[in-house]
Image 1: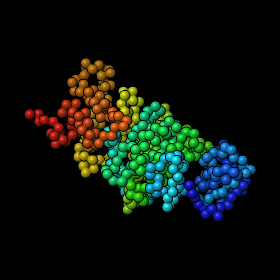
Image 2 (image 1 turned 45 degrees about the horizontal axis):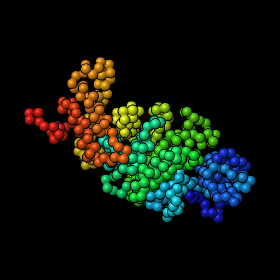
Image 3 (image 1 turned 60 degrees about the vertical axis):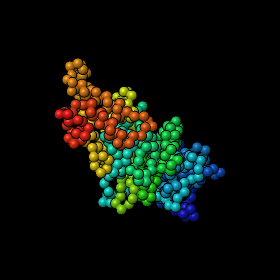
Image 4 (image 1 turned 135 degrees about the horizontal axis):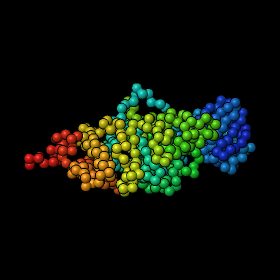
Length: 465
């Protein structure tokens, strides 16, 4: 980590008034701003790092990244660097496992690079943005067939406690490809348990060994301020890999609810007036400052695609975090407790899920000519199957017509023949769409009204034959 003024020009302050938990209060400072990077030097101890949370009349409140345990305010020096936190950027990150501050956890040396970038990033001029295009194939049928992820898109996963969102995020990170072009993954985990961190490392070991992965792990017992830095460092690294190195980068960030709770805690430490459910009033703009760092830039190679994962407290989709995320992003993948209870993995609720940019990255010339028509027919049939199931609960299956009963068969085939797959199974798009056709052909031909006649003729014998 680096920032700001050359070391010889930094002014050190020894007027640290007190330490309160992770906070250090420094008096008599001048020319200090919010989010400025601070170097703290306890006598006889390793240097620690901090960020300015608040400045008021010469007093600065500093959040210490490594916490303040064992520090004596009377023997502490604070050097304000005059700039926000910067991190090295470049291909040296690939294959590395680091904590949420970018410090190695894999036993290797610190990440070195020729240049550095500010973790806050810079807004992309909207005039220079290219619309997202071309698919990112995940190897997960429920995603590739019905909510296709597109390069440069931001597509969140909405989950709830107890659902396998971390497993799905790790599987997508391990399997995703971008049509043979240079591709890598930046995986940022926030507030995870040590067991979950070990699971992610094991699941992504092969991709890491291939130098196609940057893994940042912030565990639940790490400092709160680190949780706020983790996605910013991940996106800073991803932007350089994409727009300077020419790679297509998938950034997976989990769990954004943990991030928002850390933001709420820091906001309370700053003494800010709380808003909805005690989150800070700027939660929307803060989330947007992360999500909007994805995309494609005219004249620059590569792309940044963002897949945020968030858990909805009590499964409430109107909770501020999923609610505001939905306003910023381009669709959502929603996980369902009902499908989880049926033994389906991944338990993706297709009718609640949506990729608003799917038509930009799927169909003729991008995936397969029949892709969009098959997806539309699947969703239409699934909606009808839901209605038939509700009717069957009222009148019983014996009172249903043969056509209605075929929709019950379709629903079962859809769940277990298309959506359900092993957690280590990567399906090609052709395999996924062939499975989709087999599911659709459980219905009478008269019900396949959204499929062009040419596609049906290739799959079904002529009625006269």
